[in-house]
Length: 437
Length: 185
Image (tube, rainbow over all chains, first blue to last red; front, side, top):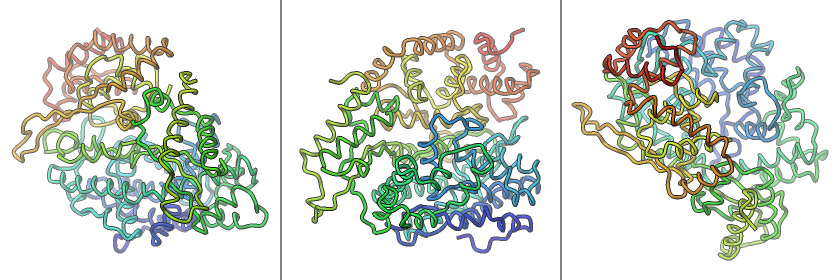
């Protein structure tokens, strides 16, 4: 992606640690290869790419050598806490550990990453406790200088810059292409008495717009691709049922978070390969974990049988979505849909999603600096608002098995079934909100 | 309450268009201080900024609960770029949802309403730059540097390249005093 990437000796030392090498076994896009066969790239090469891009940005921004080194180390280690199937593990951890006190207000997967950086013995041979603390400060946004964090985790950060290009190339699409050289060429820093911030000169607005478009197209065409949503939902359901219902020991050890020392060992023993391999083991034959992973590996995927924009729901139902629908309500909806379709409820998945929105991803407050004052990118871009609005649209989908229907037409639901599902969803939500029959 | 519920009720309590993203963020910041709630604010060029508030706003927009309208303000510079402001208000569905939640969460809504009233009474029609200066000043002071004088605030705004005059800065620091978020001489 970036040509030759050079690493300093201490960076090679970090790359050669077992926790970093483990990233070779965690795919960047989980099972997106079921849609895009070339999407088999891993967090390993992505982390190297982010370190390279972060180093370029740090040099262009005029950071001193110590700050450059800190940023590169933080970039190398930023994904070291990823679990199997990348972001799906994050969701599994959040779902299975609701109400479990963690060490801080951070999401559990970030707490795990921080524990690895601060306590892994191999990393500790090459990163002092003081340096580990600085790396963690950069990653969690509490660094003394804001610009350090913005390089790694912000709206135009090195992480995003690498994965848009990398994912696009791996998937064999052009959507993620943008002019990274022009973007870097227009990087600048704004200082005040207390802090330093990342900004772009006015000449970079078009490059930023291209970057925003790349993100939009990758989100809408790749990351939110229907089949990818379905495979991600199936992996999440398989891991959740495997832990909670099948009570499979190695899954419980890895995904039920604990502060004790053994927990990290169990967590780090899991990568994509182990999960897929274990799912084939006779030990777990007949479990939901094995059955759902068999569907994935044999590509007998669930189908999207229902979809609706959230704002097409009744106002009473909308209220419940604003306040958050309880897991119990979602489960009842899935059971009702299973009754309608004549299938097992465990294989029916209700999924709420936006095309591509996350707290980190908004470019609205990227600063454009014209040498005098800064102004937000959102105020200067003609296309930003349109793209941002499209990314924020929220949808509700239902995935279910349709194995017995041979033709695509038969697999599509009859209009009456579609209306019944919508009615059941709204009824259950209103019941939860106290306004239903 | 979820953050999007808090934000929805805040917009309902505000009662009219929230004019501009910076204004929304800064008012949410002061609300969080008055209510003693952590809404995820962290350092930013324009003062404390919460990606979580941005995300919650996006969710509410995506659900059709909140509408965003864009106002264009002439030509900003020789390159021909126009400056834009984004204004937020509840849609009809948003009003319906807010009323329903308000009826069930009377105590929480009254606290929000009280905070909004205090901010309105303290701030009048502070422009977004003055609000940003006030928020940034408070963020720094609450981070430990309580020695900032009004002159420091003026110098700091100038250091950012902001064309904020002493009157605006004076208004901003008085605003913080009326909110009882800083001690006034």
